Length: 517
Ligand code: 9MR
Image (cartoon, rainbow, N blue to C red; front, side, top):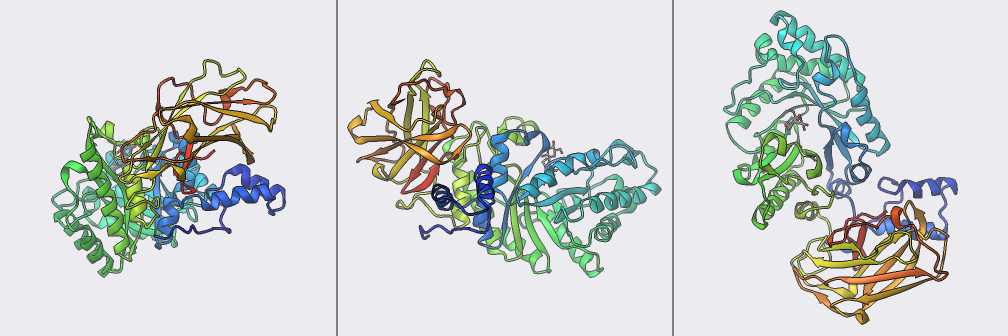
């Protein structure tokens, strides 16, 4: 892959709100400092969605209303992903808990988030046997069709223009390929599926209409049943645009059999295919082997989708272990997502990037994100006249990294706009004489971050698995006035070394670790 980064001057998705605000205030023409920052941002690595988009696909994530107030979570959700699916808030028990009483407030929060972040929304789901309010099952069978049609019509009408694709019917099959029993199947037999699809098309002629299920990713009895059904529906002229393959995978169950061939046979019927709920769980605790298998499964799913033209995109079933459905549904299992519980990208994230054609770190066969930063505070007071970060870098990749290519940024605020600083390296096992340090003012100040301590290296290298060991750093203002570190972006109060996502590491000028302020 080329190391030349694409510049995206027409899109502001992914740019910090403050910078966009500054550009609006200056009538859209950036000052020199802003241009520097823009340049830095343009040089930052492409998002998963941008990588997928370059291949004609989208890359999305499920989300859920209770997660959105988590600012660090929603910042990644809003920037890294081009599509979102509500995990729960468009389901029947939320949208029509009482017959005829519709409530779209929670789903509206999701579509508004998407609109604010330039994302598309997959509607999930109109007709499903689960998360179905009790009143539906209590209806006399003769009334179920009218209730279902009304539900589909009301919800699809409400979300016209906001939802681009609907999982109209979710999980219609048992594992052996027989139809699953539900109030809908009991009342209408398999015709409920055609009826629901027709109602959805009538309510929103522009939305793509899907059937969605799990364990249909590979060839097998269940996917054969879906294949037979969709062929019949198409023959009957029922409106249907695609098949969603959930892809809730597990390292202990193996990779779906011939996923690409299975996708292709649906595509050959003239249907789109989407990976709708991807995650790869494992029995805890995670270890190197399970983590490697997980990365390989994520990679293979992406590769299958890329190989099939009609595979329109992939959605992960939330992107972080912090908000995974897995531990509560499968006790003892977890670690299924691309980011860990601290919102740090995992090896699977790198595997997905690489599979999407993302650039590596420029090293010999290395993957992006090969270095991680660890931090502890060496400071007993957050309100004195010195900041004392302890940093160390660990090579998590498979290639040696030349330290002279590495820069680390620790972001803080000056409090009084000071411009002159002294910086010190007090001790490091790699020798302070090899460590460079200086304070740089941000081109555009951000919350908790108007300056950064930049740490570099004159020489040396880090072998795979090696750590620099701690680097004890210290800085003060020239006027020795006090800091208030409590609101500093990179500051933490931990006194032992831990992975630090708010310390940003660059290798060869490209971001390799952390989240910029
Ligand atoms: O992620 C959803 C979780 O929060 C709910 O508790 C669960 C209840 O069934 O549904 C989860 O989402 C499911 C999706 O709607 C359909 N496919 C399986 C998903 C995981 O259970």
